[in-house]
Image (cartoon, rainbow, N blue to C red):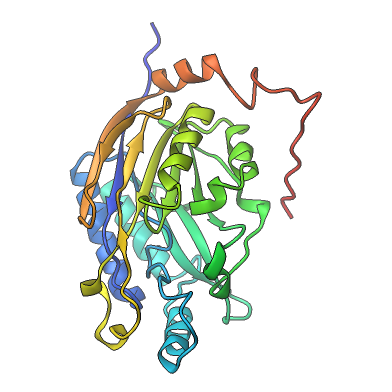
Amino acid sequence: MPKYPEFTLAAVQAAPVYFDREASTEKACGLIEDAAAAGATLAAFGETWLHGYPWWAGERSTPLHRQARADYIANAIEVPGPETQRLCSAAKRAGIDVAIGVVELDPNTRGAVYCTLLFIGREGEILGSHRKLKPTDAERRIWAEGDGASLTVYERPYGRVSGLNCWEHKMVLPGYALMAQGTQIHIATWPNVGGSGCDVLAGAFAYQAGAYVISVGGVGREQDVPAEYQELRAPALTGDSTILDPWARELAAAGSNEETIITTTGSLELVLEAKSMSDVGGHYSRPDVLQLHVNRQ
């Protein structure tokens, strides 16, 4: 009998320190340690967790709204940069892999930011990062568009890991690009898992890919908003994170508005059971009829 790798997956559901990259980085490092203490092999944070999802993006333009836009860019991080180095050091100390959503500053113009999912290895190195291909609705007023160069699956000792941001799962083709590379553990980041069909999309990905899915959202409550932004509409980000198995069955779930770390143990045995029935990039595909071209420029 083969010995199948086992692993513990963690969804870190917490509020960042909005508009403060230094404090958010410090909090993230502490949460990485907490996830490791809970036995995590891989810990995932929500979409643009560092330094926060722009819940105010769709509001009408006012002096405070324009200030928020400026402060949002001013607190973005470079990849790599001082903040990512601190995250890498925390992951190495903790001995776990980390996937965390960050607001990434464009290093050339320094006037644009990306919704980026950052992958960090337990060795203390950046494995890679993925910029969201198409910001959704009002997000287009804040985030620039990414490209296809980073639609990548990362080979780790316990399995193949991938990730996408929010409604990239609704686009279908980015997900298939990762499924065709044999993803086994997928991170689905959201500002909030509850609502907008996020739970449906996460379950669909798990079932189609035959992969575990860490479906992780952030927390944003009125008390999390800095004093100078209290006049903005309060965020309503309740988290509602879940971890799903390759048959889309819920293995762990976080409560609404709760700062917590949920974990579950998985095995590649279950992944292979699911893929043996339907490997959509392999024996359950028809490349003679349908092909996907990914522009990696």
